[in-house]
Image (cartoon, rainbow, N blue to C red):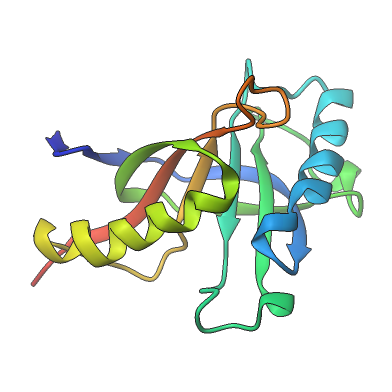
Length: 162
């Protein structure tokens, strides 16, 4: 179902491996680099799994140096997690209903997409945000993009407004 440029999707929960970054959301590349190398060595790549970024703190409410971000990759079914600690951590990413906005621009402008979703789209949508974190499904590597842009499906967790 589409509502303007936003699609409402129901997704299942998924198991992920992740590396946490603490600091500016614009400096997450080192976590992505470590996770990508780890995943590639195990045959996990964009062709068979998804890369998901999770911003755990609101940069307007939390000091930039304390913001937490998880660079994640979905795991194949039956993946033996315990054999790979402490190089990466593991967790379950919640499924459920999300408002999805497809974004293609520079990383530094992604905050504007969040602002627009929360301040413009959400109040008019008939939905409200719930307490699950937002998800950024990363569809390209900005370092390899001809224009240096990131292609991201931004998932905002929602529920019906009561």
